[in-house]
Length: 104
Image 1: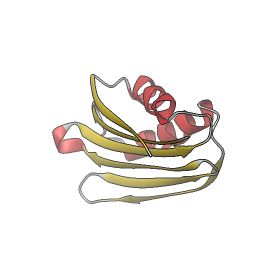
Image 2 (image 1 turned 45 degrees about the vertical axis):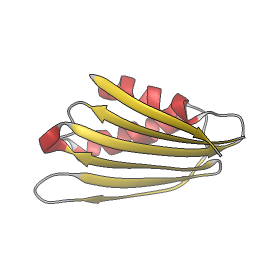
Image 3 (image 1 turned 135 degrees about the vertical axis):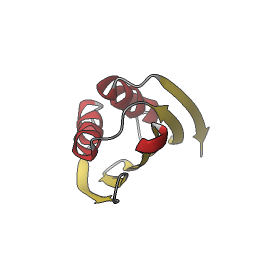
């Protein structure tokens, strides 16, 4: 089964390293296989990161000035993407999550 999960997460995303490391940890904790990861930090704030997975990929785009991050997770196989999103939100202590899941 193929899943696409789009989430708008509200929380404190001012610390780019924390956000990036928690995204990696969330993928790992969900049982995903990380193949490669990269990030770009914006000045004065913000982060875009991508994690390539054996199961597909995860991206995050943060807007710290608004307290928002957009997390997209695409997976193939037995691990539904909301598992990663939920783990990331717990680690980040997110205050609100708006999600849409699409089966492709």
